[in-house]
Length: 597
Image 1 (cartoon, helix red, strand yellow):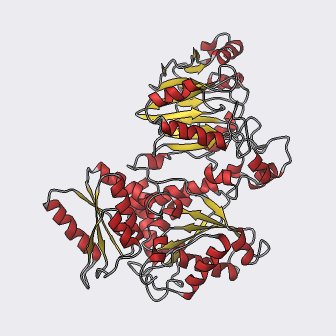
Image 2 (cartoon, helix red, strand yellow):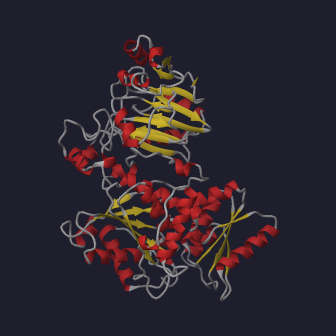
Image 3 (spheres, helix red, strand yellow):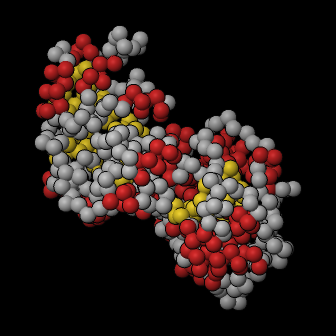
């Protein structure tokens, strides 16, 4: 199921046409995804939810059309959800390709009456009007099971539970706190894959009648979790925003706003992009991860007259085993392993490998065994990630002096096969075309949170994160320029060559015609130190500076060295004060408690 949110604003849109407040003025200035249309959605191009006066522009801006739509579901009769005349364009002479069958149009009694008044002979407009009654399920011409549910909003207003091909969506706005009948019906039904919540009032105190704020969203999500409708794999989306929400009048809803961190704009981008939807994936952790501003670090480095706007993308806060960037890769690697019916994950890395720790965690979460091949020798005392690997139940194999850990993986896998197991080998760092797809997808997440990013700075240790992002930013047509910071030796002559090669493999797996030359990749190694994981004075200074200015820790192996590079670039004047630079935190904090670090 592909869900395209065509609009995420309340009735007045954002910016509101008659408003000159700071929030609306900033939205006009930034443009792009900050221009929020009124709510509406499209599922797999053939089912539409609501149809308002923004529809024509929504289709133009999203690059989509409504030629395949066979079903339209209306939630209620307010003008930001239904403008009857907008349905006239489905018939001649307004289209040269009218639908072969009438479009099934569903709504409550008020909606049906409005449409009958506008179209006394609906069949002539290729419309088939049908009544929705609360708690009475219907099957649409597209084969969807739709259960209309009572809303706390206008008379007869409905919420929608839609099940298609085994996936279930709850379209949960406009409404205040959900009526008991709605909660009971959702609890009795299948677990939800996607749930949309009304967030009209944002962070402001509200009665949670008619609409909700974030307090109501949390309350309803918790209640649905208690009833089994929301699970750990449910994608929760806050939407339907209003400019008068208190948090928005205090602080524009951009990455600096707590509301935006929890509910980034989803306009013009799908929850499950078609390119990615066809590949096997297992959802892990909490995404999107937060995007935090770094105002005190910016002030320390010269203030807004000299220093670019600085933001930090917190992949250390994804909710699994102390976080880290490898989780995004493991979503796709685990999906591939599950598709092959594998029962054991085998991977390799340094003794303090963050990737190995997260692989062990993912295996534990899904009832698989984990075998970790680590560069030896085995230490006398286990610290940092090694302690966590043990707690996660992984089997550790330490390489003998001079032994290649990748070769050791093959030996371990052969032994497992001989014992009747079915191992799945994951390369160091999860950095192959399968895993790096995770960061091609992550680029879309960042584009929704910060469409005006001009630069992305990230540590490059096995190449997969930067390679995926290189493809992702090009897929999204963003202007962000990737700046990798090499923190380990490349496999070949340079990271430029290795990242370009892996990026091409990612593009090929996604089926897109993007090819990168090494000179299009930027990944200097000036901040690595004498070797991988070697302490550097610049890293120590950067780590302490971020901790004391922003209360955020980075590790001394990956993100700490990338942060040192970012600070040097700022001081060298590489960025303009008008730039927006995103520093991608890749996790690795357990290394702070490891022997030698």
